[in-house]
Length: 191
Image (cartoon, rainbow, N blue to C red):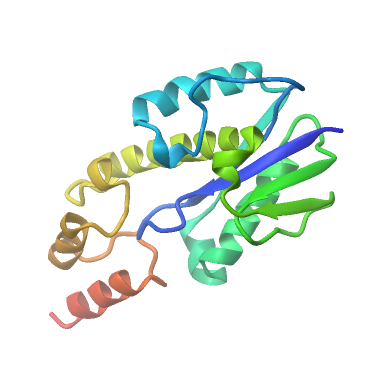
């Protein structure tokens, strides 16, 4: 049976898209050091992503936009990105293992596994790909919207990011439905 692992990256940031990846690994496949992407350095994630893309049977990365996040909410946008990732696989999966406690609506059976990104290799692989793509987007946002520090905080609500939001206001890449961004919009509209 072709089983894909599915995970997301980017639910927490105040800016940018939310990403999801789906990965089908060959039977018996292993990779030293592969685990939950949050436990890996950026360099290690990039190295592992190259291996995963080269050695998996199929992989797909998809996203939901800032506009979709603001329209649907972050949970539903995450589910949408996961659906897109599974549908984007060049080889159709027959079953999906999803990291977390919720399963998106899919055309195949699926199971949610809390902490699956640390226990299931296919989910770990998806975790790595999603995080690499989300971080790459943050680097692009740094170039498009200088001054916010996206390359440093990757869009998360750090002290630097919150300070720059207050100073510069929200950009088009910010999630207007997130409270700190809404607060910055209200503050900047008062002047």
